[in-house]
Image (tube, rainbow over the protein chains, first blue to last red):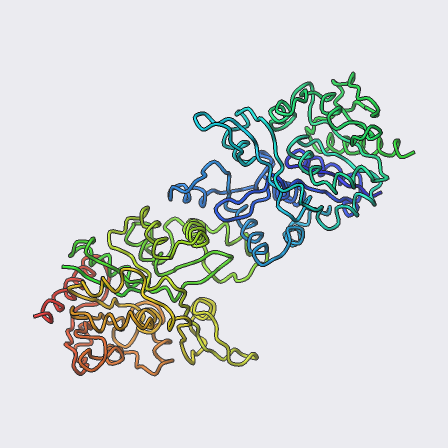
Length: 319
Length: 319
């Protein structure tokens, strides 16, 4: 049983922690969003890759959901004392070592996929972590800045500095058109018995991954059923600010809305199956098998049950 | 009264802290050794510049003599956990922020002298800090490595990893021949009323500064008297491992030995005056006015007296 998972950050990381309880981690490939990546103080930062790596490797701050457990902030405080901008990015000391290693390897010419593999030699997340692409893809958000007019700003600036409160006019995955899937991604999709869309942000996580043309084509062409897990429960995101992203692209913040946005594979979309939370049991998505199960990752047992439900649905759809 | 000081790290920093008690800091230019500088984990590190900047700016770890007070070591520990080499370099978290700012400014094209000025906007050391050169000069140490034969290794590797215990065959200031003094250095030497050689390592600190041809020529041609302070007291270095450096170039580890190594300006050397410690009162250097005064920087009062003695000797020699 081999599984490929399209993964964003916190939600996907927690979900993967449940998935590896019910399937051999070595048979799981996580294709991780890198469009949130950024340069900060000269360091290359890959928030989603690190969140997944730290979570599965036992190094995550479980309360916060991102960054390292036992984190300290000396470097961040010092940079602020130098008056260096930006100050709104949460750059922890422990975390920073990861960025130093990554930046130096990238500078030496290694592609991000190999850098990620090298970092995982320490963290041993069990599953194979692949960046969606070795090329740079960067989500920019088109906003109207007070007094400045319409501007495209980096996703992280919109997300962290403005806390997604500045209405987004559009999300642009800059570089996606020329990006190729990272080595191993297409093979993992083609070889999978099940392809899962983690309960991640449908626009800037899963959507960004699928903005790489060959990657989307590889998913659509895969023989395995594609099962998504709704990140929206009862009309609100379980985690994060997906509603602000969905508003911007005119998609209702509901399990049905996101399901319809992904669309049925039979109609040129992505989904064969769609898991929604029990309270969203009346959700219908034309052409897609919708199943209502508990989708709140309150603890590992609940998350494991979610993982099993997705694999069971995939098995049913494979028949 | 304007003063130019050729400065290494810890000894020079402490001496400068005394000097600014007796002369307007704004009239002091410290020309700082950069041949100990290195790249570490992708960051540009300038140990002597930082030691002087932190010391005069109130940020130094006074016990250790280098690095930041209240330092933490999370990044260093994490890099070691990744198995990244080298592990022998003391890269503190607070200190690291300085290196991040510096590296990013250098990457953006600013010369080291302008980067140093920018960093000093925070630290306000009072004196003007100039790197000896904006070009890269790097002291390499020729050693016989067990089982590997003769190799040239970076000074920091010899100094910190091998603790200067590996016999040095030679010191090579790589890049010095093509290096120019940083902007302002020659002007500071020409305009000075007194030029001081801080009680720094004569070989790898003061010697490296003077390995920049035009800088040495500028000092020799200056109208101001040149007064040196012996870093050797009673046949041993007051601080550091200058003896290992002097051994390598065949200079006796004594106040007389270093004085003769610097040599009299009247005979093509550097010195007009040479301050030695009271216990080295019998020191003679042909052609150089030698004066014995207390040269142990036990506290700020003692250091201030040393500064006054050097300026007084310079004033005497100017007549």
